[in-house]
Image (cartoon, rainbow, N blue to C red):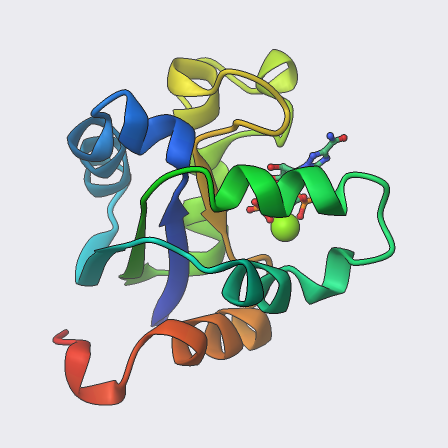
Length: 140
Ligand code: RTP
Ligand code: MG
């Protein structure tokens, strides 16, 4: 299996509860390596742009408000089959459906305040990484 990259966000519900380390520990234990990381405050425009695929969804406004409600940590993760590996350790979108040991089962508060984002395909991973990082900020 090839070593690939994916994009992750530690969401405001997690940074608020000082869980950057806890979330990152689960990512690392799942075989992912943090090769870029920064803590930022998203602007409304940045959050709307990032979630543009969801703009017709009923939860779009609430999602954008939530994502700008506090700092986030954006990360590039590297590992074997990184997109799937990350989705597996994140767990289901709704923490009530998430498997034991996953990040969302362990830490998420609700379907919206669900602690992490992870790219859902290699194509989207490349787009999302480029949205936040310059190539020289990623050190593999
Ligand atoms: P993500 O994009 O954050 O990694 O999560 P995901 O693929 O598991 O979920 P997705 O369907 O892409 O939805 C993006 C985010 O929108 C919020 N959401 N709220 N209120 C709701 O019904 C609802 N559904 C989704 C969640 O924060 C979800 O992660
Ligand atoms: Mg998604």
